[in-house]
Length: 167
Image 1 (cartoon, helix red, strand yellow):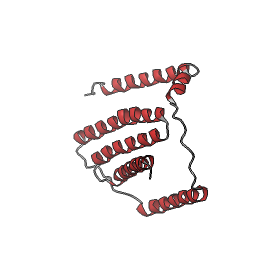
Image 2 (cartoon, one colour):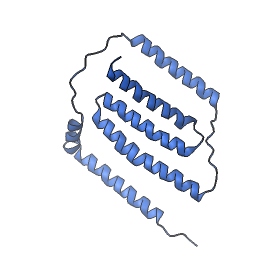
Image 3 (cartoon, helix red, strand yellow):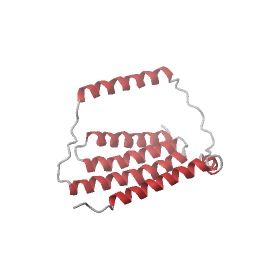
Image 4 (cartoon, helix red, strand yellow):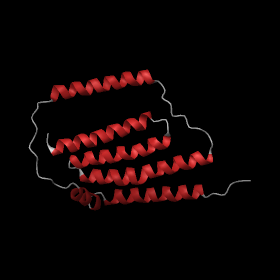
């Protein structure tokens, strides 16, 4: 086994293991922190696929933004509303049947297409430069419009959150 294979299996184990904790955990805070490791595992898999731009985006957007927002939301909601959150599983049997069908389909597809031959490693080429050039030249206007829309949404959310309560 090569070092590359060991690193891949390590990231795959981290990703799948922490995703299972997210799904099966009854404590929502533990599930949110396990989601952190799931996101980092996916970012590691992107690095192994030589998709460095996707890996950095995964860490910045999901870990830096969405997961932080989720953790703050969970922690603040538990303090304001003193209600126990139910995280039990519903419809477990149909979900297991569907998961078995999907797993069987993927295993069959893998078995049908596996030739046992791997392609030789190519030279590593960064994907960030061409994507950055496209964003700053051909797609500059849509990129700026999206940033202005996100800024307006953020200002609107802050305005709505600071609105005085009606008596």
